[in-house]
Amino acid sequence: MVYKLPELPYAYDALEPYYDEETVRLHHDIHHKGYVDGLNQAVSKLAEARAASDFALIKHWERELAFHGAGHVLHSLFWNNLSPSGGGAPQGVLAQRINQDFGSFTAFKKHFSAATVAVEGSGWGLLVWNPYAAKLDIMTTEKHQNLSIWGVTPLLVCDVWEHAYYLKYQNKRAAWVEAWWNLVNWQDVEGRLAKAKNK
Ligand code: MN
Image (cartoon, rainbow, N blue to C red):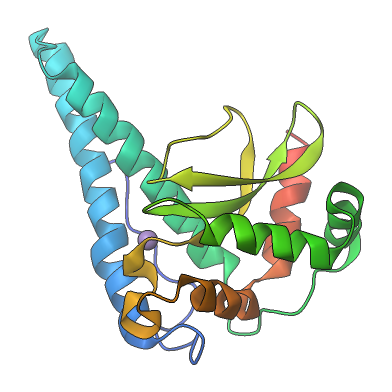
């Protein structure tokens, strides 16, 4: 298998009380694993299609590749963006960049929360590095892969699929997003920004 489910960088219960153990366990072990399995299946089916020179189902498997591939990438980022000792506000270069591109941390946080809560259906809020303008942008995606600009690098992502929050927060997506801020690992986000800018 080409892709593997990454281990969580902390214990299942480490993000309590903001993120409950049962949801983290299901989200990682079942949902994220499902994207890894789906991605490996798409890779293997596309190889079979090439070998047989049979492209009758090409549209289906290319869609599966995009959906599960984007799902795997975003979930891997999501887990690493969080930390039991997260929260607060960013420091240093990331803080300066956020002030420069969004006016202030408060304005950034309000914009990110509003955009993320407003995602239609299942999707994500994302802070991205946009290399074309050399600045940070806030984006949203429906499902895992729709509405993106090619080539931007996601730095911080918030999952607002119902599977990410429904057990604890039910229909209160805004309450989940508000709780999620308490877990953000700003050092991880700053490290990703440094790498993205040097690409
Ligand atoms: Mn998810």
